Amino acid sequence: MKLLKIALWLVGGLILLALAAVAIFAATFDPNRYRDDVERLVKERTGRTLQLKGPIEMAFWPSLGARVSGVSLSERAADREFLSLASAHASVALMPLLRGEVTVDRVRVSGLKAQIVKDKEGRFNFQDLIEPKPGEKPAAKAAEKKSAGGPVQFDIAGIRIEGAALAYRDLASGQDVSLSDFNLETGRIAENAQGKIDLSTRLKRNAPPLDAKLALNGTYSLRPEAIGVEFTSKLDDSTIQGKLDIARAAQMSYGFDLNIDQINLDRYLASSEKKKPAAAEKKAESKKGQDAPVDLSGLKGLNAKGQLQIGALQVQGLKLANLKTGLNVAGGKAEVGPHSASLYEGSLAGSLTLDGNANRVALKETLTNIAVGPLLRDFAEQDRVEGRGNVSLDVATAGKSVNAMKSALAGSAKVQLRDGAIKGVNVGELLRKARSALGGGGGEGQADAKEKTDFSELSASFVIKNGVAHNEDLDVKAPLFRVGGAGDIDIGKSTIDYVARPRSWPRRRARAARTWSSSPA
Figure (cartoon, rainbow, N blue to C red):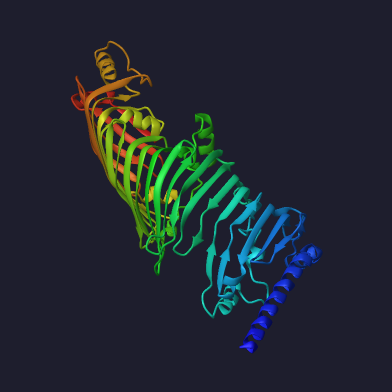
């Protein structure tokens, strides 16, 4: 018994001595003495300049941690700054580390700044940091060997990033994008953990100009059976509520349910940028003959399913309300629909299919009781037709560029309007003047852009093949006459070759017919 007490005293003494040794080491160890050595090693191994301007503070018990400040890292073989931070702090609990568990206290980063550059050859200015050096084993394989005894379990109490900024520049395209005032705070990050997330930032882009504010707050769950985020977000004037889910399987799959009160996509999409007429014509002329690639291969390997609702939407000038649609992406194909919406005093229903395997697009749309005039003015910036009615479209195309898709367009379209007008020509007035001319009472009249031909009904159907929409059954019913017509609209070449004639007049008076040919569509 006495021997056992002596043994316990010896063990306790050894523990006290060990703790004392750790305390003395922690109290006397000064990591700042090795500042020059660290900077020299970084220079030798990476060709970059590391500067540790602030003090380095270390902690050893009960957590192993460090706090640094005033850190900067240069570009490779250059003085330009690549990354810097005002301060950063993180610590790891020692005892769980011995069991293969990484338990991290809250990670704090303040004033982080990074400059990301993509050169004209497509290489990023950080690739030298992640590529293995000659003779070195890839990091992944080295990590496999280290963890061969069992998986390492991570548990992070939370992450806090304050006042961060990220700038991205593409030297090939001239595109500049930046995030500023980036703030992020999360709850616990670990398996089966739940927490809250708060994010805010400001996004800027040089061309087309964009300046947007984004804020997001919500909850998340990292449980295997839940794996999701429920959030409310603010994007400028838009409020977005939603739920995102990620399912773990052989292939990751994603689910979502989004509800947006209002959003103007023309503010964020480069292709939707509105130009002044003169500038638009000049740009179109300068880009004449150029083509834009279309690549849908990014759909391959993506597995997602969900639904979207938008109270008010503007895109490509179109204004829609109460938009509802489903989205299903699998097997390299994306099905956007069935979708429905209210627009221009009528309704829309249809579906859109994108096939990444064949670079193919198929669209089916039915517009019912639409006010056509406002729609054309907003979407096509044209003011040629007024009226209310139905429009149906069933088309498909494939190709590797926009021009190739235009030239390969095939399908059908149909228009049925009532109580409207065709602007730019007054057929009734032309017929009156033609009658007067035939009777010797005057010459032929000229069309006037301010003129218009009122109609009670207008109908036409089109067969589309190889990018050309062909029509043979134009039927315009007016109070005093009827007009028929036939011709082609070449979508690929943006030209029209069309002839319209009054049906009620005899053949000898057909020279009064109105003819359009080879004019811009």
